[in-house]
Image 1: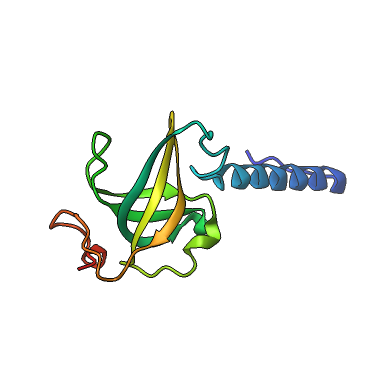
Image 2: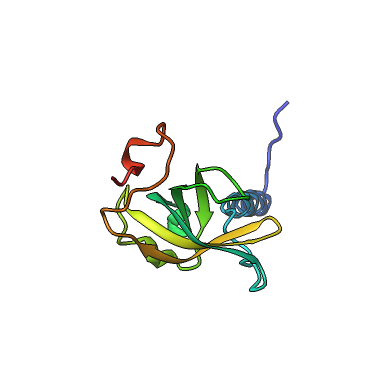
Length: 136
């Protein structure tokens, strides 16, 4: 049996409550993995990680990059990495060879000091790398 709201005041309160619930749920869904504090300055830093920029993500707060192997840490892979300066991605095209410093602390990672490498850079990426990621 449907519930019938008879007074205008009750309708207004129900509408206000529903709009509030929707706003809170949208706010909760809008957070990304790059939000929150960056890795501390005493994080482990892997300097000169090289890779091929693929695209910005989450409104430019992250980048998708296919990076070379990081010895003793991880194999070459395509991954999303939060960046310290979102505006630093604005001039990059898909496939642009880049280098960056990867800061790692617990579960937090961040790319800092993103630099464009010469177009002639040959990256050590597996043969099954995305077509746009080989800078040869």
